[in-house]
Structures are given as structure tokens and as C-alpha cells.
Image (cartoon, rainbow, N blue to C red; front, side, top):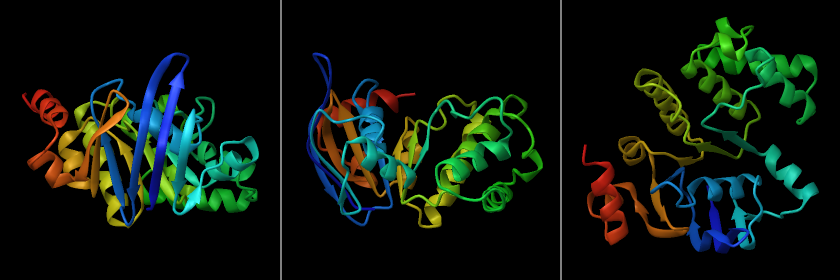
Length: 243
């Protein structure tokens, strides 16, 4: 994954959420965004996803600048797999239909093509037996695995994950984290917002700590967690790792 931010700013009214963020990454398979609540992590991820417009600045993914107008954003979003903390599955559709619907309506696949792709992905995640269940009939871990299956079925250039385990209990959290780790081993590119510090340390090639809309520190996971340089990073890790 090649990712570039140049002086990116995002304001909501008078409130600045992203404050002149700049970074250049190349050859990174997993970037983890960590930091205190309200620091701008999810907003930055949504800007990469094309779900929020930056107020100013330039964002580029894999060498291509993201153009923030409707026609270009439709193309961009089709190349991105996004997984949210609240699953965002259609509650009235089965697990299978939650995957086939975007393949047909957004990506132009025929019904047979979409079904073949969806069933293959569900089988890959040991979910095929649950294909005809609606989200309410699935466990939290199963719902999030369906959401991840939907994200990768489109063969995205990068998968964006926004706190994918925050709504799950510990057992289901472990189930979903193992799946994400497996995707990384397969060579898929991931941009991850997480509060799971041990997971970020083990999985990420690079870690960025965001606080008050700025990158307080960016570096390899072992450096960020083992020998942080920023006082902001030290203070944050001291608090979250205390217990």
C-alpha cells in the first residue's frame, strides 16, 4: 500500500478534527491508527474511504490522488472494502444477499457471478452454513465476519477497518482478530483503527498515534510501543496499558 496525505485538514463548522496531517508511506501492508477518543482516527479513515471530504489538502492512495467529487468518488469507493464497528449489514437480508447485492448493483456482476463469489467467500470464512440467516440470527462475531466477507468479495485494493471489534465480547473479539491477522498474512493491505494495542503491535507494519487531530508519532510498531519518542505517545500508552 502506498498512502500519502499532504496538509490534510477536516473541519466540522468551527471544530477542527484533522489539523494539517502529512505523511508518506510506501510498501506498508498494515497501518494502524491509535490514540485517544476524538483524536481524528475514524475521520481520517473515512476520508481515505471517500465517505468524508477533506476541507483542504491532498490524499493519494497507491499513487492516485483521490478526487472528492461525486463521479470520481463512486469509482474510488468501488475499489475500497470498508468494515465498521456496527457491522452495517442490511438487517432484512440474509448473509448471502448482503454480499451479492453490492456485487450486482455496484460492481455489475450477474446474479450467478455474485452468488459464486459470495458463496466462495462465505465458505472461506466458515460461514456457508449461515448463508441464509439474517443478521439478527447470527452472533456478533459472525456478523462482523460477514461484514469482512462482503468487504473482500469485491477484491478491494485496500481494506479499511474502523474499530472492528469494539462491539464484541472477548471471545468474539479474538475470533475476528484472528481473521484479520489471516488476511494480513495473505498479503492484503489494511488500514486499521483499533483500541486493541496488543493486536496493533503484532499486526501493523506502521503505527500512527493521532491526538487532537495531529499525528503525534509515526513509526514501526515495535518502536512506537517499545521506545516511543513523543510525550503524547508515552502518556497515552501509559494510560491504556496500565491495567
